[in-house]
Image (cartoon, rainbow, N blue to C red):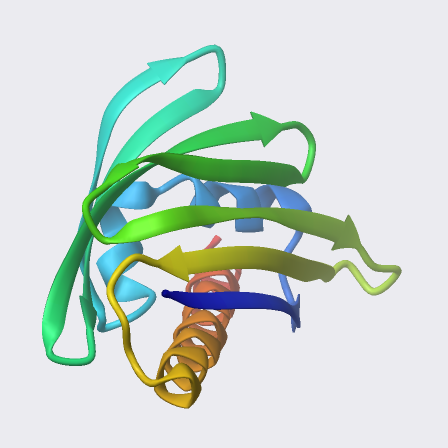
Length: 148
């Protein structure tokens, strides 16, 4: 099995509220990273979302669902609801307002894949995915901020 644990951060020239809107727009996550084929919200109960994802990884496709809890303002955590591919998928995102009207996005994630891939490949794929995801989040939030 492959395990990845990492922390990633990015500064976004948007408010916490604008970034939250992008983070909660699950069905448009495919715009944030080309490896996410789709995301679909199955249920929302008291700011707890059950979201299904389909993601390309290496030569395969992973399907999984996450329970995502939003703690307002500015943070969310998730854990694995079900998956044939992941043994674990959990993390937390925290948005911190900055003095210049921007915010910092801090992401901590732990992922364990049930199937085996060479360790360096899995780690590299995970790092690349989360960096692309945060870059896409920043671009989408900043463009929404400009359009407003």
